[in-house]
Length: 189
Length: 189
DNA sequence: TTACGATTTTGACTAATCTCAAATTTTTGT
DNA sequence: ACAAAAATTTGAGATTAGTCAAAATCGTAA
Image 1 (cartoon, rainbow over the protein chains, first blue to last red):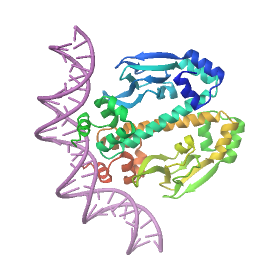
Image 2 (cartoon, rainbow over the protein chains, first blue to last red):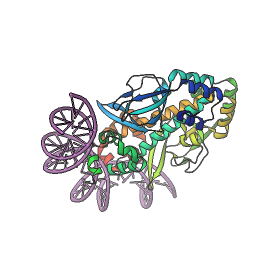
Image 3 (tube, each protein chain N blue to C red):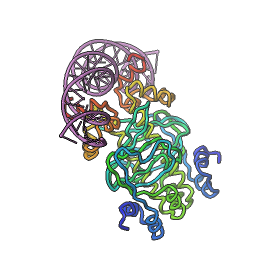
Image 4 (spheres, protein in one colour):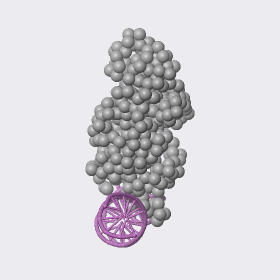
């Protein structure tokens, strides 16, 4: 149980010995280079992954433009929520922004765990909750009055991400012009 | 099985005879007048309710202002998601906007159903999905460029709600000034 | 190290939205 | 039906953000 993902899952709900053994045997470490896509558009394959190092960005296309839907970093768990839920092809793309190391379990193994270790379903529910809360937080942020307020709210909540992500990616996340965000950062607005 | 809520739940996952009987015995019909609060701030008590008639609005306070988080109407199911998830006092308030009739099951009965009829947990998961998707849709809407685009997107998606809800409530939902929304509606912008 | 491409910053101008104030319309209680 | 309250509309001026274009900076591969 020296694996970080397993420790995290175990803290959500105590895992039985059998499940523990199963998960440990199926865990895979994967590495990605900056710009590499960890989940491509239209891919159905779902996975659960723990980020050991690096930050990733998830985005979708709207009128040809890439809109950032969120950022995640070391210690966070990535699941492709849409796939997780409905088993339909994802229209969310997950991209590594830095050199990234993850610990992943494949969808097939996940299904096996759900069926054979019912307590594992609780993990699914808890992760879903987490994503729901994140979604609500983004709504809260977007309803701030000015772009300045939106940016400073995020800066307080996620200072590291605001440091490490590209200006343009943050801009589409906030829903503000890239140039406007640049001006806010240099306090010219 | 002539009850609409039960029919809806049954369409999510076929309910066993025992569960059916239990639910039918615990269902309560309640009525609310316009302006009446169906869930007050800080209340922990969670419930699942099917709206038979009327529209309701859920809102939260931000800097003393009431911000609409969504609207629901006849045929929709209301759950106080936050309570549902975490059993903490809700900061969401649910208000009847018209004379409203609902069919409700109390939280205690719900818990009983979860424990004694495991298949009922699937309903919880499916409803969570539904709320997550709704949350994402609101994010999508809020990231439209102009207020005009936001309003017309909603008008297309939810024409009835745009008709029946108050201008001011819609405005806080969209995140736009009440006066601006009025001008958009009368095409003066 | 240099040169190229990507990213960020800056400027000038335009468009959208907010603010505050007041008028008008609609709804509600008696 | 009428008065009072609530909700919506309208106006004018101030503020904020978007657009387009160009310059500056940064990071990376050869």
